[in-house]
Structure formats: C-alpha cells, structure tokens
Amino acid sequence: MSSSLVRFLASLFLAIAGCTLSARADTTLLNASYDVTREFYKEYNLAFTSHWNETNPEPLTINQSHGGSSKQVRAVIDGLPADVVTMNGVPDIDQLAKVNYIPANWATRLPNQSVPYTSTILFIVRKGNPKGIKDWADLVKPGVSVVIPNPKTSGNGRYSYLAAWGYALRQPGGDEAKAREFVKKLFANVPVLDTGGRGATTTFGQRGIGDVLLTFENEVALAIKELGPNAVEAVVPSTSVLAENPVVWVDKVVNKKGTAKVAKAYLEYLYSPAGQELAAKYNFRPTNPAILAKFPDRFPAITLFSVPDVFGTWAAAQKTHFSDGGIFDQIYATK
Image (tube, rainbow, N blue to C red):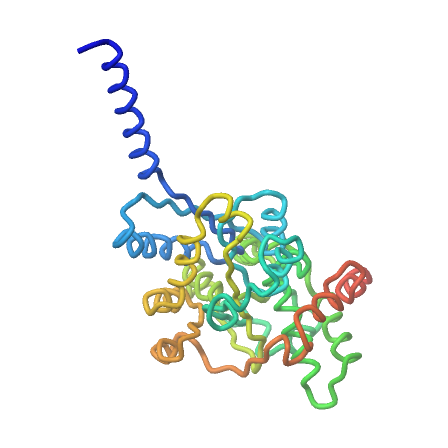
C-alpha cells in the first residue's frame, strides 16, 4: 500500500470519526430560574431527559441557575447563556423582549399564555402561631415582624407586595390611598429585605428573624418539611394573589447554539400529564384542571385575584409600584 494511500485512508478515517463524535456530542441546556424552583427542576430535568432519550439518543445535559428572578433575567441579558428562562412573573420575561432576545409575542407560543403552573402567597409562622396571625390585617399590627424579600429583585417579594395591596384595596371602603397606607405599615414591620425568596426563608428559618414569612405556596411546604412541623406551620389567608409562572425559550441563545428543538420540547413537557403531576408533587398548582383536582388536600381553597384583576396590566403595576422612584421606593424610603 502506497504512503499516499495510507495518508488518504487515515484522513478519511479521522473525518468519519470526527463526524461521529460531532453527532454524539453532548447537547447542553441551561435553565435560568428563580429561587424556589431548585428541587422541582432537579427532578424534572431527570424526567425530561429520560423522555427525550426515548427518541433522541444523543447525550443531553441540563444545568440549572437560580436566584432572585429580576437578578436572573439581568444575568441573561448580560450574557448568561440560558436556553430557557422559567420565571414567576411576566415583567421579568418582558425584559428579554425589550432587548430583542425573544419576540414580543413570546407568551402566545405555548399554551395558557406560556404559564404551565401557578402558585400563590401564603404565610409561615412559628409553631403555635404565638402572634395569632390569621390574615393580612394581622401583619400590620405593632410588634409583628414580617419577612418578605425585596420586591425590586424578587418576584416572591413583588407578589407579596401586590397581594397585600390587593387585599387592602378590596376591603369595604378600600381605595388606593388606604391600600398605600396599609402596605406602608406592612413594610415598616419588615426588618430586612433579602434579594430572593430562598434567602428570605433562610432568614426566617435559620437566622430566627421574624414572626411570619410571606412566600410562595411551594416554598411553604418545603420550609415545613426542612424546618420540621414542630418548628413552623402554615397560615392560609382569606385571599391572595394568583402567581402565574411563565416560561420561555431564549431565541437569541438557542439560535446561536442550535438548541431550539430541545429547548422547546423541554418547556412543552411541562404541560404533559407527567410534567403536571411533577409540578403538583412540588406544590406548584397544575394548570391542567383534571390533575389539579387530584390534589384537594395539597392546594387549599383560597380566593385568588390576578394582577390584571387589580392593577390593569403587569406593565402598569411594574411601572407604578416597582420602577425607580415608584411607590415601593417612596414607601420604603420613609421607613
């Protein structure tokens, strides 16, 4: 065999091998999410990978990034290569549309305006509820210390703020002035503002600060499990806000990485019976009514109002209450 033929065959072999390695190279997804979804997505990623590999044999790796929702979206805008973003409110994802990372009509690309599951804000109190906290009105009483994350950086804090405002506004004789005064009194009782929901849970549970913690329903269940039913207990208020948790694939990232197909499938699987059951397992409210009905003991009946019900639109609520110099800044600056 001539040396030239040997070189040709060697180069052909390397080319074929290179193609094979390329075809079987790991596909990696990054899910940028908010603070209190860690445990859910850890199991969901395993379930989706198994589902995906039934018809797609190439290796798939899914990584997670968690933090305060607004900080997470800021990180994506600043270069965090997240293929998908799974948040707890519309305003954070809208920030991606403003910089053309996703289209303006992103919410229409998946069912239910791209909201596969929901939550709400409940209370956690010390065992025995020594301050007798039963509803929102109890949070503004003198001597009650309330732990809420920062509404400027946390969707958890934002929903807590809006829930309190909506409660006051919807009381007999309620108006904007009374709602503002109520929320001002509430935040006067807040000793510290953590940047995210998980940090607030740590402040309440491990640092022992506060008489009551306001947080998402799924975090309530997890906190009771971790801290122990002899340490804390849940309080379900008379009414609260509907926390809609939208998801989106990030076009700017997936188009560059070639991961659009798997990123879309990853989010679509959240709507499947398996995805909905898993959401319920981690105390997120499924949007599939049949699956939600299977868990009456897990999701207590509570009167919920949506942000548009009370504030018109998310954009209006964001601008009025949480923009720089908005009502929250005015309220908290005078604390």
